Length: 379
Image 1: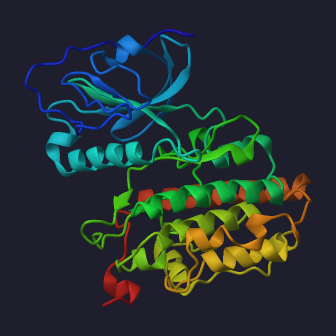
Image 2: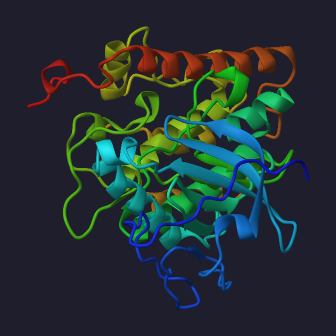
């Protein structure tokens, strides 16, 4: 099991609660000073450390850490995101972060339970941290999974994974929720950056066991129109979001299309040595399917990606429409060879990893993550 880390601080009476009053599936509500169990168990009067034992650290972000933990009663392994809520910390300095945290938890609870969304198992808080407990992805992030096995997989595996991803997106979109940050992420030593994992592989060695995760940027479209603020990861962001124009679930379809392009070809569709050049490529829809990396990809698969990466959102297919595409509904016309098999495939996979790392570092190194409307050619 390993050694338990950290300590259990006491909750002070009258302290402002970080969590919203979330409804449990069993119909109960979060009691003061405790936690909310999202799987129907009666944990509202128990603290996080009474229920779970922290193990090793999985990752570290600016204001949070992710741990592997064990449920004491069952021995089940889980993932725990511990968000720093110390008095005088980042939440006190900018109270908008408090609203973001509440919304992330609320959205995740609403969509938890879908078979292709990472389950939210519970939320707890104390004076120092908010603990968000989720099911553990034993295979890690999708790109790390591919990197560990040194293969891009088969077209059939990509098809199964993409279908799961689009079904999860469709589920969100029917509830007027947009994820806004679907992407491949390089974790650990490969990136040297703490990025949230958005597509997680639940079972080791099974690429198409992926689930959608991380709802930190998720946005409800109702009751008011979404704010025209560009958020997300540059190489995956939809043109209408980049231009700060009205958007809907088709912005997620674009991001999923970039992901599909990467998985099928081993390359990023939109490239640039600077962020400005990258943004220009995105707004122009400047990606090519003529390179050697597409020679082993079937025509139906390429057609699906083309329909996802349409610059005009009005012409872009929705998640529901894509799920009826012939490539996703059957195996007819699908290439059965392994994508990127052998040395060529390992080179392509390494190039994809390095490309993602480069853009992550570029975005981090520049103090200006988003260009102005004038630079983008907008109003």
